[in-house]
Image (tube, rainbow, N blue to C red; front, side):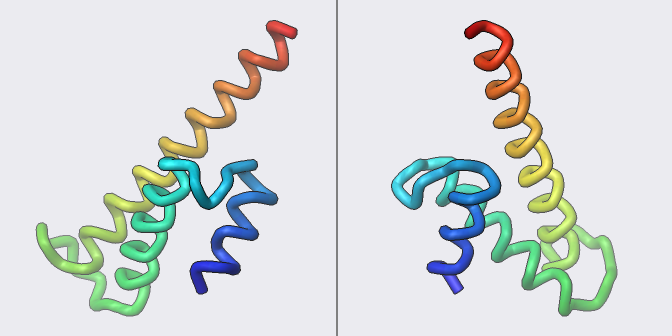
Length: 76
């Protein structure tokens, strides 16, 4: 699963497996996947609550990468 995740992250986000952001996104993705198969109760500490938080962190990371690329594209 990690290999396919690294391929997807490389193609979609342009991150290499050695990139620290890639490892962070992987951990958040795994937490998100665990929460998908859990009981949907938003109680702190439950897999579902961790999944919601992980989804938010993944979204923020992707938005930051997109904004950074836009700045570099406009600057060049």
